[in-house]
Length: 239
Image (cartoon, rainbow, N blue to C red; front, side, top):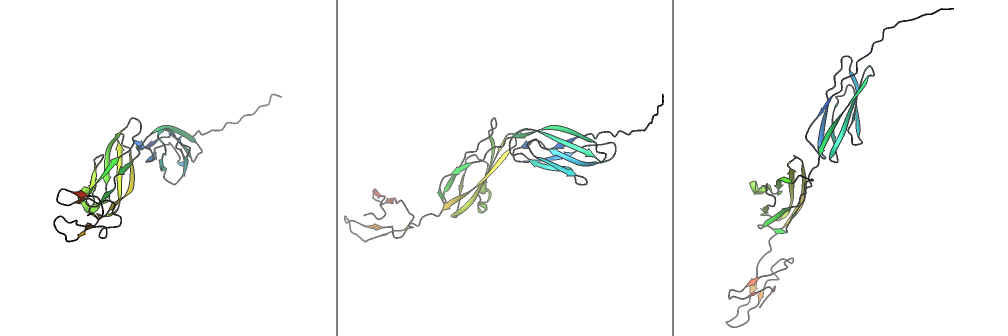
């Protein structure tokens, strides 16, 4: 029959949002990375931000909440972080950026057993990641009464405790890449033993008996006697 018909309608195509975001750097393993949305659009507003951190975790933020998020990575490496934004017109766009997470060192130390008023030695056993040795040390001996001596930047320092007790010793180590680790261990400082003895009155060429075991602590394990005549003994109660 040759009949036809037509209709014309005006379609409005909304522009996609221009996605962008920023993040703090450099970043270390197990430290907090701060992400901030910088996306812009010509019209409308963003109603949803979907963050994928590239390590199997993600987070969504809905308007009117602020799309600023924090995330920490358990492992080092390069992670592709993707931000997807959706506008009130249901337009969606995405952007992916690589985030480099640097490996951190592992702080470790040992110390010798010690008594009050004696120098206690601390030995650093910290391990840096491959290619990065330990570049900085900061010790806190948990002994604020010692004043400026309470801290040290040496790798293997010594500290004198003037009072027996248990002290929380902290070591912070850092590498040249700016990553650090902290360890705190309790250190036991023993009291100095009580020293005392008695002796019987004796004459020249007689045997003199000395008694010490009844005066000192039961935890005493060694004795060192000097009799003043060039002789000595390691017995608790010598003659």
